[in-house]
Length: 266
Image (cartoon, rainbow, N blue to C red; front, side, top):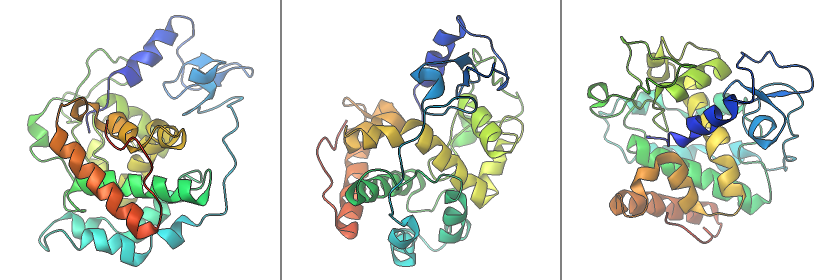
């Protein structure tokens, strides 16, 4: 997962009119996902950590657990090779435990909206992990995912921030805030994402809720979720991988009995 640098850069653009802190804003200001103080959507909206955060939309009565059944979850995993390390690592039980921290996932909008979000999440997970086969990115240690300009979440030179987990969390500017939110040292112990299955799923859900959840619920379509997760595949960057993601999404929508909607490609 090679998330756009714009996620971090947008935070820096607001930094000039705010005071950097660690959720120590005055009572009338919000602490943004990037750790800066402010009062508009960039601070009080998605990812707001503390303060008068904008209220999240109400949840519906959908039970994610009843949709992500053993048959659904294991139906994905069973398509990977028996020798895959992820088959014992990724479990439905770990997913459901991690889900407890993200009550908005799959529970906003109509029942069809919920099913489309669940289908989209697992379509990306299927692609990123090869049907729950891979815990870490192939050849990940050979790749440099350190943004040295990010001084809020500085890289540990002895650690690698390559893809790990269900959505292959990457880059120091994702490991840092994910760790702060979840409760592990993402910068100094990024390997936790590949050793603790519950934290691993929590990082995937953390990234999703902060970067993808609002995209799919806004009606932009599945294609916009591809752009949010790996925009380099879009605009002809890698049409084959886009096709694979769309194929999984259509497959899971069919299984869940919901129409996939429009704008499937990015």
